[in-house]
Length: 326
Image 1 (cartoon, helix red, strand yellow):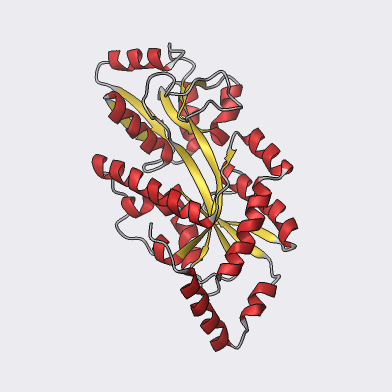
Image 2: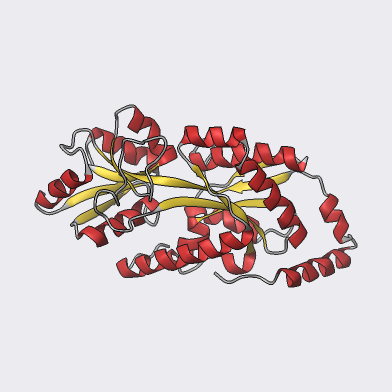
C-alpha cells in the first residue's frame, strides 16, 4: 500500500477551506456528530466492536459518534460511501481486511481506490479464526481431522460465509499446506453456514471468534484448532494449528479505522489518540473479552505497514487459486 504525503494533504485541505470561505480552524472546532460507517449489518461482531469503541471515543473527544450500517458487497458499499463523499469531514470507516487488503485483488472494478481515497487512523481489532467441525464428525483434534479427511473418497466439502471472506481464504491456505481435496460450499453469511455445520450437512469450516463462540461454548460446534500464534484466552483448552503441526499457520479477520483522504493531519492525530485510549480502556477490554476478539492497537503508520503486508500476502493466494468476484 502506498503512503500519503500528509503535509501535502494538509496544504490541499487548507486551500479547500480557503476557497469555501471556512478557515481550517473551523474544522478542528467542529463538534457535529461523527458518523462511523460500518460495512456489516447491525448486531454482528463488527457492529458491536464499532459501537463499543465509539461510545468510549465519544467521551474522550467530547463529541457524539453515530454508527451507521451500510452492509453488502464485501464492505464495498461502506467504503464507497466514505471515499466518494462530497462532505467527508465527519465520516469514519471501519477499514478492514476486505477494503484494504483483499478486494483490490478480488474485484476488477471498484468505485474507489483505498490507496488514493482513504487514510489510516489506527488499528482496531482482530477476530481469531477457529477450525470447527460438526459434533457428528468422529474427530477430536487436527490430527484425527486430517486422517478422516484424507480417507474420504472424492474429497470433502467445507463451508464459508462467502467467497473471498477470511474464512474462505484461510481454508484455501489450509488446502495449500495439507494438500487436502476440498470443495468450497459458500453461504450467504455466517449464520446459515454455522447452522448447516451443526446439522451435519457440511462437516467443517473456519469461524471467527465473535460469530462462533456461543455455539462452541454451547457444544453445537467442536473446535479443533485455532489459526493464531497463541491459544485464545477464551478457549485455552483448544491448541493452535501450529501446535498441531501446521508451520507458521496464522490467519485472522482484522479491522482498523479509516477516513477520507482529505482529512487533515491534526484531525487524524486527534482521532488516533482517542482510538488508542479507547482500546486500552477497561470497559472496552472487558467487552472484547466477552466477544472473543482481541484489541490490536496501532498508529496510522503501523496500520499502513500492516495492511500493505496483508495485501501482498492474500493477493498472492488469490492469484494462486484464480479467484475473481464481480
